[in-house]
Image (cartoon, rainbow, N blue to C red; front, top):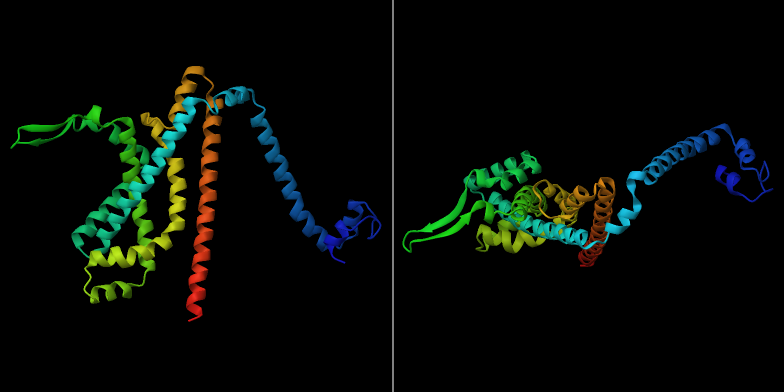
Amino acid sequence: MTSSQLLTDPPGTAAGGGDPLARLAALPLRSRSRILSRWVPAVVVGALAAAIGWAFVSAPAMNWPVVAEYLFSPRILAGVGTTLLFTVLTFALGLLLGIVLEVMRQSGNPVLRVIVDGYIWLFRGTPLLVQLVFWFNLALIFPVIGVRIPALGLTIGGSTNELVTPFLAALIGLVLHTAAYMAEVVRGGFLAVPPGQTDAAKAIGMTSLEAQRLIVIPQAVRVILPPLGNQFIDILKATAIVSVIGGGDLMTIAQQIYGQNYQVIAMLVVASLWYLALVTLATIGQHFLERGLDRSRRRVLKAEAGR
């Protein structure tokens, strides 16, 4: 009889009757040690986690009525919408620019390769916060942005402070920063495609750009989709940093509200609940996407095996 049977059998069917402690004492020393080493730490950690959680939940500063009041307020919902807009635009534009950067790096042109490597070095090597503040203060470098057309005597542009709004400055910073990481994700997909396919495409008369667009990229997409899901979630959470320049996102609105009502913790809880909800939905979507890709991959492998 195993140790698990001794601990779970109905009363009277094992040594010690229905007393769990008696049944535990009836086990060999080695089995008792294994059970205790498994459950005692779990109980201790669980108790500590519950105590810490209750201390936070029951703290007066949490002010749950305020949380309930603002959780679905129009201002917070507007901030959620702006956060989603930042996320979608940053993901789409960052991915597009990342693909362009990697195609430039794969072109074989040493000048383009140096430019791409320098871009990635710069934007991955400096903190996102620094980049956002830099673009927000672009007017200190270029007070006016414009293009002069001498032939027509026209100047198109205006004040940098008017053109580069906090939203645009935040979007520029997020996109340029994200593109550097997207280029590395795309590079991993390109490396997964056998180089012989590019050589074969060139052998039938395709240019390097055509080979990348028609042969390599469609196959690389299947490889890079799972890490792209992780990038989407990272971008969603990273949008909170645009609050330092008043980007109008969820965190910006939460800061504005607690600057008025002084309910700092309650508004941070509101923002945290929304971020958790959005990230959870994105994670579920990523799960179903990866499961669909796995099924598709298995069908392809089965079809190839049947040939």
